[in-house]
Amino acid sequence: MKTVSGFILVNILGWKISGEFPDVEKSIIIFAPHTSYYDALYGKLFLNEIGIKHTILSKKELFFFPINIVMKWYGSIPVRGVKDKNAIYCVAQMLEESQELHIIISPEGTRKKVAKWNKGFYYIADKTKVPIVVIYLDYQKKEIGMKGVIDNLENINTVMQQINTMYNDVTAKYPEKFSLELKV
Image (cartoon, rainbow, N blue to C red; front, side, top):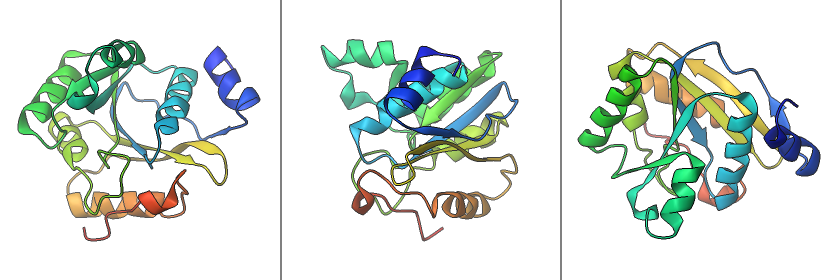
């Protein structure tokens, strides 16, 4: 391990890190499943270990005093909702103005079970021509890492099918709260 975060994640918490982060300067990273507050802790330790410049998009409702201080320290910025047009353009502009930046999004948008994922991540990636990096957290295997990179963004249905396939064998902390978007 090259960081204290990696040491904590692997040696103290007992997680395995899988896969190598791609050699890209900008990306949209989707992070799933997201069924517990612990996901954010393990995810942040992982992101620190791989050493990428990143910003985490979080619900605007989480930014109230004193939690807003922790959220900003954590590297989060408030958004109204990734599917909101203004958020998509704002994040796209951040990517366009940066030489290196990876935007972290949980497409489920909540820790509750949802039937439909927010597609803002796709629209931001498509607008800025950056790849979608798929990161997972598997509690059964106690493993966190890379599932793959999607850089052909021509068709949202194809992209969602690829994502469904990548997450199909992943076990959430609360499996009953995690669902793939089966209708693409």
